[in-house]
Length: 287
Image 1 (tube, rainbow, N blue to C red):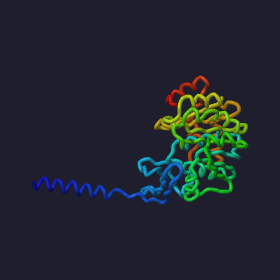
Image 2: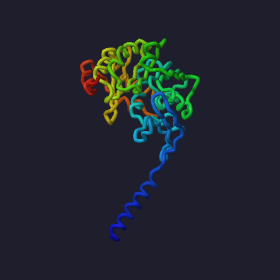
Image 3: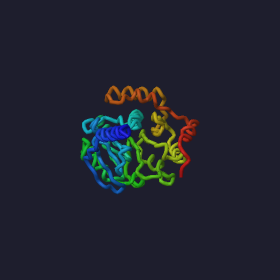
């Protein structure tokens, strides 16, 4: 009897101790958006500001380090996306389709202080969070609250680089992407580059196939977990591996990027027309 009571006391003590170790999230911002509740929570260990959706504290939507404009470590695919700089003829005007926590925006602001950036996101609360917790140059950035697919249908003018990271609308059906790449290509300047973060579990093969039909020159890399493939598609003459290595070395010397372009280029694969099917097959057969 005494043994059972002692054992019960031990379990209760361990439970209390374990409960004491759990830290209550420090919520810095909370707002109901058109797409559900969004909260900004401070990580007690790293000091990062983590963005969560709908009280789901097991999955971080994106993360912000308020005093670090060039940190992309939370999303490996964004690091790979910076390799797109090597393919551009110019970087005077950039379009971001899908803003997230604004890390790619502030990264570009840090290194390209005169580049104009149009940032499109369907969720107005994301703009509020960036304006509140990010440091960015309002003179060269324009926030546009609109569905990215509709924006491409109606946009005027063209861009040197378009970066697409859009996953607010699920599932992302082939119908949603109908003529998307064709229209997007029309808004790239000569020598322009399209960088696409394709999230493997939510993109169907037919969508990726359509991308290959619209862009003759495609390169790609895949994240370590296999969930994200970053495609870099560019206009103009086909570039050799040596061309890209030279461009990467030149830009790295000029800008001293945090994530060295020559290192990133070693992980970029140039895809020949005959190899496109191999990459298409990495995706699922979805609706």
